Image (cartoon, rainbow, N blue to C red; front, side):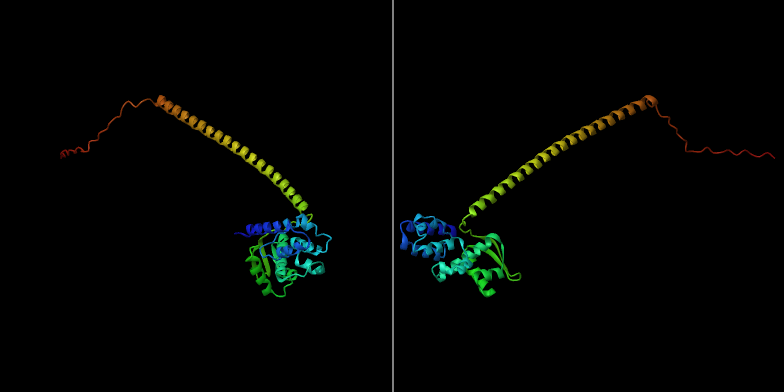
Amino acid sequence: MDIEQKQAEIIDQLVKRASTCKGDALCPIIIEATSHPCLFAFSEILALPTVAELQGSTNSMYLDLLRLFAHGTWADYKCNATRFPQLAPDQILKLKQLTVLTLAESNKVLPYDTLMVELDVTNVRELEDFLINECMYAGIVRGKLDQLKRCFEVPFAAGRDLRPGQLGNMLHTLSNWMNTSENLLVSIQDKIKWADNMSEMDKKHRKEVEEGLEDVKKSLSMKGDVDIRGNKDMFGEPSGMMDYEEDGIRPKRRRHPVTR
């Protein structure tokens, strides 16, 4: 079972339980949700009316805790620790995992120095062990550790719950992307049309060249026929050949007697 399917089942169970509880009864459910090793999304629980009723009550810190895990980071907790219940080790681990996801939203190359500060880690070995064992093995990120450059390359990271106001920014980004895509499509269509026109012109030109070549061939053939007929008219047909036969035997010369 993949992480998304397993997480969906856990959320469904917690939502059913939380929707039937109020006040103090919600606190252990929120603690369970923020401690569960396979749960990294909390918006469905936050959206429940029974959970929203914790606002302004004596248990409001548990609502703040749920919001922290939905949108916040480890640094946010350290700056406002008194607003939340004391975190258990599982919750601390979960919040640091979520912090890595937040950092990977805007940067696909995370420097070790930045990660060590954000995660409150003191050495590289501890950081790399955390990234390998608690992030990559957990399936929430896929990446590569570059010890030479001291950075964590993250081509994939699981998404977190949308923060308040983030939906509007996302819609604006998508709208800009759609406009850019439409303009690109128009440009591509224009180039295709231009290519088609050039192809037609090339075919027409090739046809004209081939027709011209055929005309030249015909013209040369006709000229050759005329020249041959002209030569026949000028010289006529040969009437015959005169054979000369040379006698190969030379006659002997007679010698006349000399008169004395």
